[in-house]
Amino acid sequence: MNVPFNEMEDTSGSREPYRRIADWINKTGTELLGQRREEAEAIFRKIGITFAVYGEGGDPERLIPFDLIPRAFSGQEWSVLDKGIRQRARALNAFLYDIYHRGEIIKAGVIPADLVYRNSAYLPQMVGFEPPGRVYSHIVGIDIVRTGPDSFQVLEDNCRTPSGVSYMLENREIMARMFPEIFSGGPIKPVDDYPDELHRTLKELAPAGCTGEAAVVVLTPGAFNSAYYEHSFLADLMGVELVEPQDLFVEDAKVWMRTTRGPTQVDVIYRRIDDDYIDPLTFRPESMLGIPGLFDAYRAGTVNICSAPGAGVADDKAIYIYVPEMIRFYLGEEPVLENIPTYQCGLPDERQYVLDNLAELVVKEVHGSGGYGMLIGPKSSKAEISAYRKRIIANPADFIAQPTLDLSTAPTLDGTKLCGRHVDFRPFCLVGKSIRLVPGGLTRVALTEGSLVVNSSQGGGVKDTWVLQE
Image 1 (tube, rainbow, N blue to C red):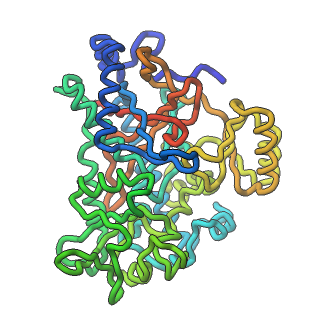
Image 2: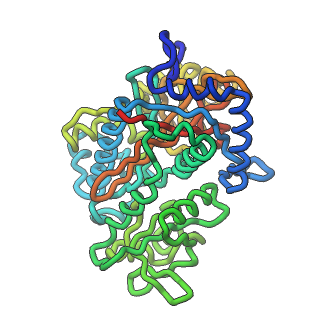
C-alpha cells in the first residue's frame, strides 16, 4: 500500500481547511486536550450516549469513543460532496420506484433480474404501490471514503434506517460547549437544524388524506435496541412522540396511538424496526415488535412508513455495483462520486480473481453490516483466509470484494500524541418533496493504528466534522 493521503498536512504545512484547527491545537496543547477528552467522555456517559454490542458476553452497553480533533472540509470540497450525495439519493429512489413498477432498468439489461427479484430485501407486497411523493428512502446515509486531495468514493449506501446522526449532533454540541472560542465568529457551517429538517421532510410526505398538521411518531423496538438513544434523542429534538409497538394499533385501516386522552390518529411513522418485524399479519407471524394490520393501513394510504418497506434492495452490496449505471439510466448524468471497484463473487471470472487474490482484497458479505463478517486480506492470517475461501466457494453470490484502499488519515488524539488515523464519512441526506442536506455528517475513525475498520462495533470512534464557509 502507498502512503495514505494526510488530510491535515501536505509538503507546505497545514492544508487550508485545517489551519484553524492547527492553530487551536498549538494554543491549547495536547495535554490539555487529553484532559478535555476525558471530560467529554464523562459528559457522554452522564447523558447516556451509548451503543450496544451483542454476543460478546458481559454488559453490551458501551460508550462510543469520541476524538476531540475535528475533521474539516473546505467549502469547495463540500460542494462536490453535496452535489454527488444529492445525485445518488435521487437515483436510488428512482431505482426503487422502478423495480416495484415497470422494471425498466431490468428490461434494458442494465441490472440482472435475479439480483433484484431474488434479493431477500425485495418485497413482492410492495409491487404496484406508490408511496407519497414516490419516495422510498427518506433518510439516505452514504458512506464515503477519501483516497487523495480530489478523490472521494462511495463505499456503500444505507437506504433503510441509517444510524449515527445523533453522534453528529452531539459531537458538535460537546465541541461548542467545551471550546466555544473556536466557533465564535468562525466560518464553520452549523448542523443543528437537522432535526427540524428531518421533521419537515417527514411531515411533507404525509398521506394525501391528512388534513392539518401531520402527526409524526418515531417507532422504536424499545430500550434494549442498540440505537435506542438515537431514537429517543431524535424524537425529543423533533418534538414528536417516541412509541413502542404496543403504543400503536390499527382500526378501520388507520393507525392510532394510545394516549391518556384516548386514541390519536398517526399520519407518519419514522420506523427504526426492520421490515420483517413491522407487521406479523404480513411478514413474520412470530414478530413481537410489529403492529398487526400496519401494512394494510400503509397500502390503503392512511399512513406513511419512513423509510418504505422494501427499500433495502437499494443498499444491497451487490446492487451497489450498479448505482453509477442507475445515475446514467434515470438521471441522464455522469456520476459525481464514483464507486470503489468491486468484484461480484457470483460471476465465475470475478470469483476466480477474488479467490486468487484474497490476501490483497477486502471481502464483504452482501447482506452484512457493522463491519461484521469481513475479511481484510492484508490483515488476515493464512488460516483466516483459508476459512473465508471455503465460505466464498460454498455460497459465492453472498460475497463481493474490493481492493484494499489507502484511506485518508485525519489527526487524532492518542493519549497526548497527535496521530493520523483512517477515517470515513457518513452524511445524512433527507428526501421529501425536496432534498435536504446539512453541511456535515458523521466522521468515523479507526482508533487502532493501521486499522481500516471504523465501525463503532469494531472499536472505532467518532469526530466532529466541519464544513467551512467559502
